[in-house]
Length: 426
Ligand code: SF4
Image (tube, rainbow, N blue to C red; front, side, top):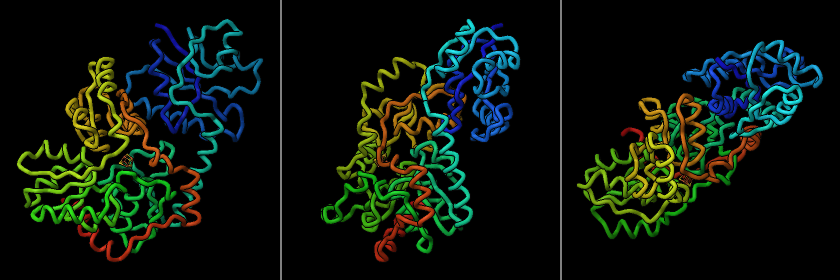
């Protein structure tokens, strides 16, 4: 039996340990984590106990044979290796992603294998993040605020979330909350939805720059013309629309319930906006209806290329292909499962498959890896820049100063609420 000693930077915000451990082939792994219990420094953002339990959580479903030990932080280069050897006992090889650790072991003629750090983040950044996370969490309690976070947000934002989910789940949470302030880590239309559903609460968006381009693709004058052209049609709008657009629709939907909503409408003709890809997907599921699509699209999902997906399938032939319905039809046709972002988590948990190719915004991979740590996920998507505009820094600023308040005009609010209420009830 061969034993590996793994000394690597542990990235609690990114489940980096799991990512690193997958690269180790020895039968037994000793995980050494730098600990303030040895170095007596207050600089470590987490205690040994906290780090240990985070690692255990990330490895809970893996078959790795491991033990976790506390080792000193590197403060005294001359004695550090001997100290570590005494604590760790026998091992055959050292794995690390840290150049300094590599150098010190090699100087002592101990074999070192370099880990590829796929998710790299410095210790200083982690410490700063931890301070921000603590400040936000304290302020949240003080101000009786709730933080709702979309699945596509940066992973460090997950640390301050009261709830993480897809648009439908977040809208439902927004209705249920009794908090005084709702801070929405998502994009503009999500925060607007929360405001419409909670007119008496303060709703904040960390930055007004977090705007969904697809939601801005509807011109209400053109919509009225389309509605005049199809007087028998009902209008269904995806939740990714402005409040003003929603006010002109019969009912809203999300990617999680679009097919159900359209199916249950007592109209054959349906004007569906703004996403033509989602409209085409709904049409493929409901041939008995006539879907009249708006010419909008999500630039993130529309950019997913069939060549990239086919290459992914070649590289990972056992992987299931999971696709968001905002993707073009040629991508959807390759899917084993088509679903919303939260539906992807459920599917990955329940499926017998161990590997998944994920066709949606790239950040979803981090979310899946946290929720389903024992399985592998490969992205064929790209990044939604607008979703990443929210940072811990601007969340703190927004909450401290109660800035970037979302307001919706009274008339629009009343009309848009009717369309949203039907979506939530469905
Ligand atoms: S992923 Fe697409 S639909 Fe979602 S916020 Fe970004 S641009 Fe809008």
